[in-house]
Length: 361
Image 1 (cartoon, rainbow, N blue to C red):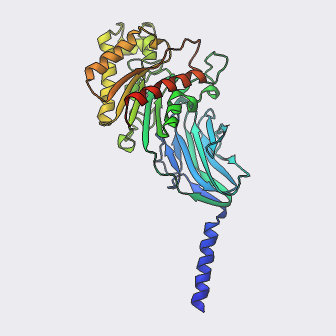
Image 2 (cartoon, helix red, strand yellow; image 1 turned 180 degrees about the vertical axis):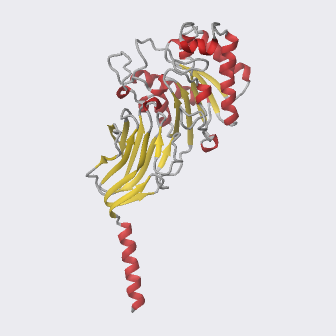
Image 3 (spheres, rainbow, N blue to C red; image 1 turned 120 degrees about the vertical axis):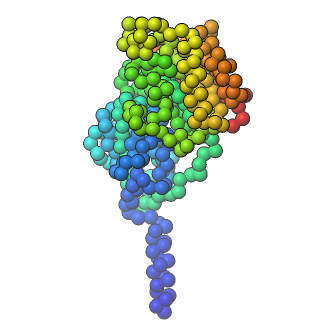
């Protein structure tokens, strides 16, 4: 009789667990949380997000869900995506606090994604975990995606000022939205895991700021030269490089401080630029021996028909003589500012068409 009572108690306990608990706290280090992009999870108390397009995902059951966050500057914006459908914008404060992400959810399975719209110069965001209420239960994360894609780029890839309808390229971070960049759109089209290494103003040989891409591309924390990314953690099937737009302007500005820093008083010649671009692709190939690499450009003026910058990329790729390195130049779109949402879609369509025709991945 006693054994029967024990069995009934155990079964009741299991059933209670299956039905969920009133409140459930999920630490940032929980196995069921999925991080996408270069997210620093080495800290003891929180995961730290820097890069555009990094995201936090989790499947769960419950009526409502909150996230415990603290932002370094209060100037970062996130898309909160509920059940792969409804989206709202979240701006975490500099004070550590819980933010309501969803409430009054119907019974059943749900998903949450927190996607970083803004660039790393706005500072980091610390994520401490989730809190789920009412019949709360975490669910297993989905199986890994079949494809992985990675982008290296500048403001175009970042989605800088993409939502500034005034076409004045406002630096206010509220207008930047990496989620609607051609890079993120392309990744979602292929249902591919997404990683984006980008910074507005960056170049291969010279930038509008002190860092150039060959100095930054291998970092976990963008501004920390000692923080090295472990490339074995993410081996993409495809890499897209969209760089040289900023170089195309700055190599003609000998009075600019970054020109003097990089070149002294001598304008770089074609051989210098081609070799620098070529070396960057060689560095990527060293980390990704089996990856298809697309060397691209667009959609601003460096991608105009007849541009010498297109020629530089073609020459570098020809020199490399690698069958898995391709060139594709997205259409030049004449505009008074950075690419709009519509322009980014055009770029993505062009890239998708090229991939479908040329690469089996």
